[in-house]
Amino acid sequence: MTMMRMPVFVWMTLVVQFLIALAFPPITVGLIYLMFDRFFGTHFYDVAAGADLHLWQHLFWIFGHPEVYILILPAFGIVSEVLPTFARKPLFGAPVVIYSGVLIGFFGFGVWSHHMFATGMGPVADSAFSIATMLIAIPTGVKIFNWLATLWGGSIRPTSAFHFAVGLVGLFTIGGLSGVMHASPPVDLQQTDSYFVVAHLHYVLIGGSLFGLFAGIYYWWPKMTGRLLGEGLGRLNFWMLFAGFNLAFFPQHYLGAIGMPRRIYTYPPDLGWNAANFASTIGAFGIGVAVLIFMVNAWRSLRRGAPAPADPWDGRTLEWRTSSPPPAHDFDAIPPVSGRDSFWREKHGPRRGAAAGVGPAEHDATVHLPAASHWPLMVGLGMLIAAVGALTHVSLVVLGILWTICAIFRLALEHHRTPEHADQTGGLGLDHRKMAMWVFLGSECFFFGTLVATYLAYKGRSVVGPEPHQILNIPITTLSTFDLLMSSLLMVLALAAVQRGDHRQARLWLFGTALFGLVFLGFQAYEFTEFVHRGFTLQQNLFGSTFFVLTGLHGTHVAIGVLWLLSLWVLALRGRLGVADAVKVEIAGLYWHFVDVVWIAIFTLVYLIP
Image 1: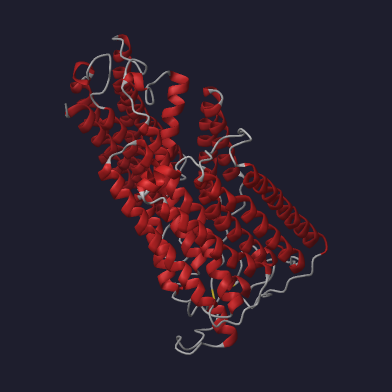
Image 2 (image 1 turned 30 degrees about the vertical axis):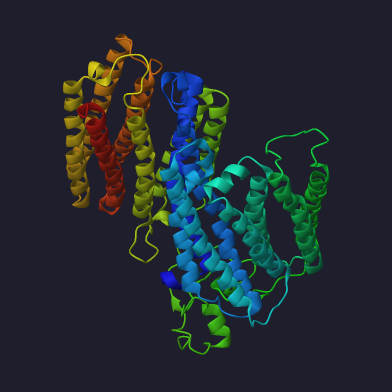
């Protein structure tokens, strides 16, 4: 299963994982700023203190536009699986579809400010984001034509899943065309905050994502449940949703064009908006009826639906090669993979021009399954508590963070104790834990990059209070910086000791690294205390807000690292950190070195550059 043999749906979800890892840190920082402004009196969004409300818009939309592709790319992947199956043809130009999805993910980070054309960014920024927005329409259009070419000349089997997939192609095209209109700043200025934007949004996210999700549900429901959904109710579900959706949102193009603003719940009766809004209301009820029809269909299927065979659709990909529903581990032996549509080739032979042969027979492979655990759910619950706390009370935020950290440690120790978790390579020589840490550190680069960028953007803009050079204690911080850098050297020695099985040295250097981290935190606590005694606090000015949050969040990362190192040290004391566990120390070292490098950047930008 090479990269270019992966199903297109898997490819699109892979792109989405990178979007999630890189797009969520800016909005996380924006929400942290908002929480500090609400609960602690900072000034990140306080115009009177010298702040800029555009900061919130930029942080939100740097996340908000990749989020659109986080929602739509999985639907594109579903359609790229459904259409070839029911057209009985390979996906036309599949590599181009894959590359276009990657390009969409890449360009998605360069178009966010087309949501801000009305904020007065200036002609240079407007032009740059306008061009980028027009460019991102190209890979999206490529997908549309590839799907149409897949259908052309195919032997169509019009199932419910096929209906929803074709519905996405048509409706998303309409939404995409109105989106290209918004790429022009003069046009966008007329349509901003109007119902035209509401129509565009729903044509891409309901006409796109929701129709794609329904296509996927009808397609994979037999594989998930072992029962078929009713095709009659499925088609009724489609036509009711298709009609209700278009009746609800197409008139809103007209409403926006004649001046109806969004985010209003009432309006005078003499503006000429009544008939179109009444049609939208009827359409909205139609959407509700369509969802109700699906719920009835799902209930009937689970209660007394026809049993589904392993391959009810004559599928092309390997999930149809196993039973419906599949066993927990899918396959007892690795199946042959000779191309993207490997199962189709296995059943029907290679198509003309395709690689010949089905490939080698199945060969034995060790089936590795992680042991069942409830701690990932506890991690999610802790994060939910913290998120609710950000809206209500800071004590819930603290509780949620502590809960999350505790659950993460319990999950890690569970992995350490349980032999079933031993194989983390999947037979490929790539340790999943190390790869996960690198992805996390990539996300952390965006997190700290956003914090540092905010500090630099607000530097020198404080309305009241002292300047940085009057406050910062550079000699003390230089000493603490040297201490933190030396801790990285001890971390290298600790890893080397574990790798060669020297338990005594491993214990010594792990504890030394943690101790140096604690010394750094002590220096930081002393510095903060001195600032407070001199009247310099979070609330004093914009510099205080950016400085304390930036350095405080870095200190929090150091504290988590110290806790991690002490946990490894305790395991080493108890004789439970052997040579086979060296990769766990290596991953902790990656985190620790990253935190040190980030501090070098902070120390240089905040303390050394006036």
